[in-house]
Image (tube, rainbow, N blue to C red; front, side, top):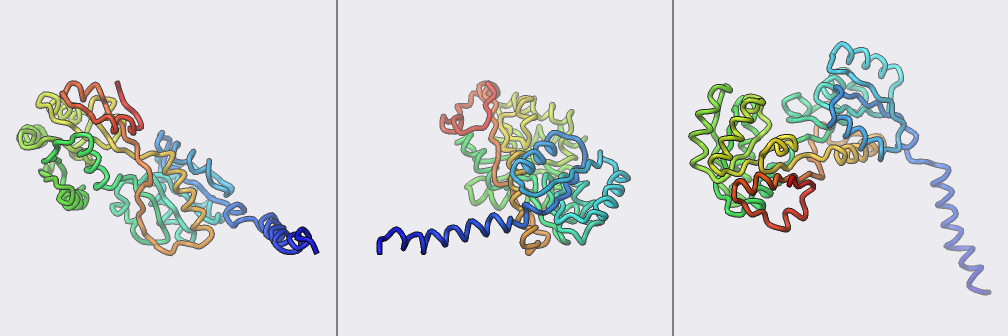
Length: 311
């Protein structure tokens, strides 16, 4: 007997069987329905949902709270009627709404700053925090500014003390010293910044609402430029306004990441309830005009790998 019939009767027929199984039995996610709840219309949320839709195989129904909790309760009633396999909540308002009112349905959240602040570390939820790991931020700051030894940061202990404690530990591992100074009100900021800047070679901004307002940002930016202090922030917009650099979330990539997480939850449920996951991808943006003002030579490899360079 020739080899051809043996091949057909063996491996080839096995392959046909596998193909038939795939065709007849689609994945759970491709036949499931997902409710997407958006906190409101802002570009980061829209980009995250765009990334989610581009990758998910599930059927998607989208709802918009428009920043209104009353509208959110109406959405809850609609979702309870059609009972989706999972919910993707985009933004903190949507995440809290889903967690507290739709506990019987698995909830995946994304684009949430400090999930623990909103009680998202427990319950039938799992999600992707907006924060870039502090190790990644400090490491990238040191790569961009090679002579960096002491980094200053101003924070409100009632809002970001957990983040600062983690950052101090990470800084030590990287051979850096984090000089962290507390403020309790925005009016304390100017004097604190004037005292801090002579002690450091770089300033790091964290998402702290006591510290960062439009007025305070302008003051900090001018103060750092006057003293030739590199200023690392957490948002592309602040770099475009004049800060040196940011390592910020890639919202489209977060959407892709949340799609994979939703598919996994539909198939297997939530095994690690309340788990907070970091974004898998970041965007490095550098303001080369600011670097020139500071007299700072950015390593060529950094510029080549940056996602955006403002010239």
